[in-house]
Length: 178
Image (cartoon, rainbow, N blue to C red; front, side, top):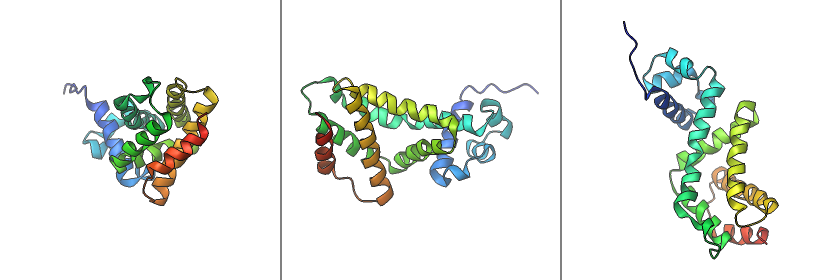
């Protein structure tokens, strides 16, 4: 029997991994659960992703695109007249107001890097990319501090279920921005 050509299979496996983590958390992720979710043979998942960490890296890369899309869609960093604190607070508000499952998924994969060293470079890339974008408007040290602050505010909202307060975020961001 000839092999079936399926150029979208790898992407379907990544999408399925993201759905599995969204529904069951990292603990529910396995080649078997992903294969079932993607409706592909188990061998397909191990063909495209030799290890579960390889699959998680691909999922984290794709999931982290959510915040990047919010940043790109607003475009406020390019305008030096835009108030940076207001823009960043609005970014977070837009991101957190969207699909909460997607935001939780991004953070679950991001925080999985604590226990899975293979994910650390991807998590670091995300933080560095954001710091690089912010460095267009401020110095590198402040940019890194802003990334840490944005992370902290987002985690507090996700973990405490306290609604996002854009005014509070704007005020605390202003205290960090020179």
